[in-house]
Image (cartoon, rainbow over all chains, first blue to last red; front, side):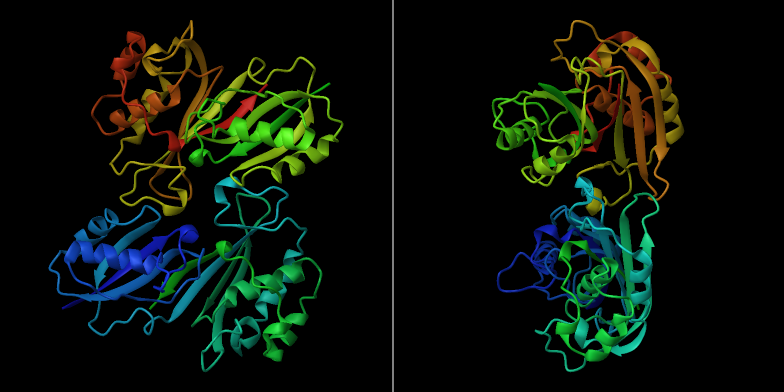
Length: 247
Length: 247
């Protein structure tokens, strides 16, 4: 058996999220079906983590065990020809026999994109949250910085979470104005792990701060409260993209 | 009556082209229906020119006569709330009573985008023609330059054209490597008018030159032949975007 690791990307618009579920139509389902078509093996793949319905991935990492002898350099092309055009395998490599895409992940980066122009960009409408408002970008940047470090992120986690601990470490954050398109903001968050809806609740709270409904200084109090009700709303899923996973 | 001119943009993926036709589902149909919903008027709009099925517009210009007294600054918002999300009105202005979006157009620019990487970009797949091949960009640039000036473009025109003259003037051309994404090429063509499929046939011919199937020097002979059969194939529509119209 070989343990194969792949980097993949997808436009999540048409799917019910990454991870298999009873209703089907997930990215995992399509990739497992393509692998079965190719190898005859009914494998279950592991990913670096699920992404919600409508969320995209520039670089998601998956791995699976296979007895197939197909050469590594053929996997991407062979699977891509069996996948819908909004899911692409970028590369396949051999992994350590013990490699596990979720457990071995050290850092993950998400990007959230906001377009706050009056009129949305039709060509990016599935990848940008359109929120036409005047935003105090410096206040948002200041508030975002508050989250760096090890914290209990219960305030920024769905109440449906079943995780035993909500303590996570945020290593890096940044808020960047798109250098080419005025009115477009990219928020990057890098951490050792993310809770359900965590980045989207952070962004929903930052938007309230950007609009002046709350001050940047409120952020540390929201974090300390460990209560979902203290944070802002969950921002729409389509602005979110899994940007990078580091092992 | 006022003559209103609007700049609009659209993602052409889902439509049978700009111009109304018996089968419906055109961009013109949706805009005229939105104007009728808003004003009660059953107008017929004029555009700078049709675009084919799957072709996009960053900036298309339309005009129409209306008796409505809705203030100019309200039109974009009012129509956008009645249009599908892949068609947006960018701006509305008053035009000279005689202004005609097609007849008054002095220069139009189209952009055609080629992605020649091994794996397509899932997020740009509706806006880039994916053609994984090694391309001689300098040869393509040289051949493209041949087209500047006033020429009979019959070789680069659909045989279905019913235009009495195929003489058009190309003012400017350029072939630019995307500064951010390796393997992505943008071809810009500016002229006083374009024949049916003209940019797409130019691009189809440039791709043959880029792949070394023809030499750059062949371009002037293809042009001089005034025969569609001498040029390359018509490149796919989804790589094409109406970029700008100047009056």
